[in-house]
Image (cartoon, rainbow, N blue to C red):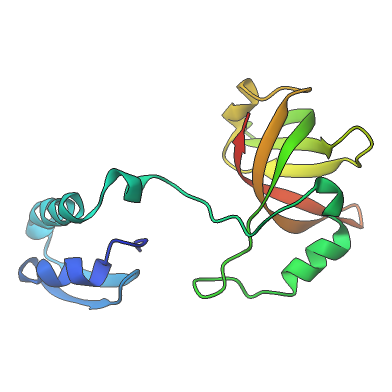
Length: 175
């Protein structure tokens, strides 16, 4: 798999002399290569990437669908977002953002503490909203209770002990 602007099929076509066969399209492809050609193929693909990609192309980015106040994140809202599924290439999962959000709790979760569970609130009278940041448990070292953060997230549903609530799935945080 590749992401724009890297054109995977064109890169494989340019490297076809090293391949037994290949197929696919711009962002996903498969190929067969002899083991002895793997180092040369790696070098060729890296050279193509160096020639065609800029530093900005390699910098992660998020497209924000809308800025929200956390008070807008309800179970009904999460159901409405899920009604837009299935999500994928032609219909990406909407990413939302909220600014100046208060961190009320920040706990590492998972067997090895590799996830971060947060309770967040907008404004002094706002209702708390739970959030999970998968594979970012180490960020608990820099995010603390009382911090004000900006957050990008998707919205999902979490069911625990028979109760379903809206939950933010964190994509990025700026402290």
